[in-house]
Length: 334
Image (cartoon, rainbow, N blue to C red; front, side, top):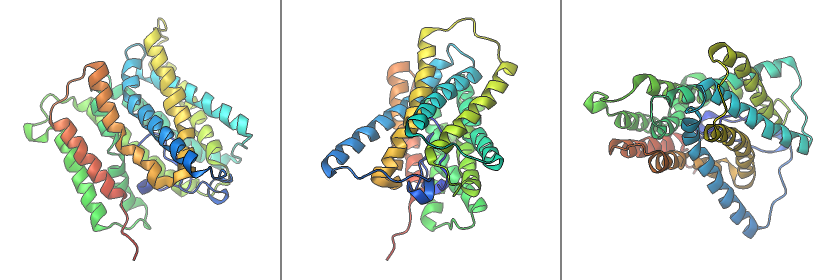
């Protein structure tokens, strides 16, 4: 569960997962040429394997956050994942010989994007999982398309609402109330942790809208922009973390491995996987990974962490996903 935004994307075309993918991976949209088409049989096998790997990586991210916070402070977990993720993308940029973005204005916009798409939501999820199960955090993450739909109605004049998408928005938030057990007075719910997880999910579409308004058509490749954004997020956490945490007493093995995997896989490798999927099968198919994330997060939390699951959690999650799917839908052209 990592998040970086690609320029030229729209909130309604994004998944609420950590790494929204570029809509048009061509020289016009990203500054790089699309990869040469692979043979049909091999392509079908390759993208399905990578699609499954991406679903697993992002689905297990919430479990890794939970394990990481057992040995480190939340800010330290976030800093560790950003360092590892940035290292992976820097290596990819070096191998592909991508040019870094130029201009103080572009770097300023990237710093804002890094805050809303990396530093803030990553930290909020880490703090949230101190008091809520990873299953609930994963389901809260799935509300990002709902927040994005609501915000785009206000912030993006060209994003016209349809009755289907508005219905999806209402259905999705009904699902959120079901997950939280509103009819029983939110009994047993940790409001602080749940609020932080929902705020983290809201932070993503804020960042996406900002990126769309400021970085579309910047001339740099998506990979270069994403790597630079992660680097700036790392700098932000490197400044904040020492102010609010003390140095860890040691480096416990399991939490350390969890933080490394969270960054190298969920915040680094996942970017490359998602970018490749969009190039091969397009954003519509690639974003379907969104709907597998809460399912995998829930299964991982229950099976590996022994988290309890009441009936309203999976039922509400299904309603949330149905609403999110409607908000992503477009009317068919005649």
